[in-house]
Image (cartoon, rainbow, N blue to C red):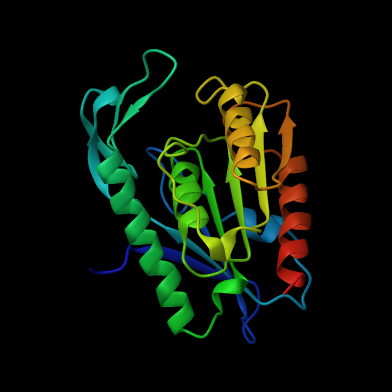
Length: 223
């Protein structure tokens, strides 16, 4: 399997010893969060590679079958549960797992890799990080939900994984209640997730970027 195409941003030219793999949302691309990296203002002592993969182009049912970047098809938003193509979600999990393996082959230990995801990307990140067989540095999810919570088989290696969930209190696309449901599920699974919401919609804000920076510095300095 060939690797997903990615945008790569490094915080410094040498001594890269950590990685953040950051998944975008529906209809977006790997370019979306590239501008966030300099806004994190990470210390010069931190050598971090940010990997922003591009989701494959697929037809999306809720958008009248329009072909767009997506980690999986969404069949309907009707009712309390949105219906997804779980097989496609799991295929995306495998594709991103290959990126983790590639970073490990390049010399970055799995314990120094953070998985992050926004919206659809967060759904993939939940499944992959919590089931990944080798220890990761952390999981960060933004404006997302946990569609595979009932079928997830948690990995022993990541039983103590640091998790931070971010959400907007005015999010109309993925209501905050879905983010809070994910937090509740994580707690039932034995995790101790951090949670923070902001007065915003389906997006990122300046205060959140500052909080993301602090959290990343914390989990990457803990190893």
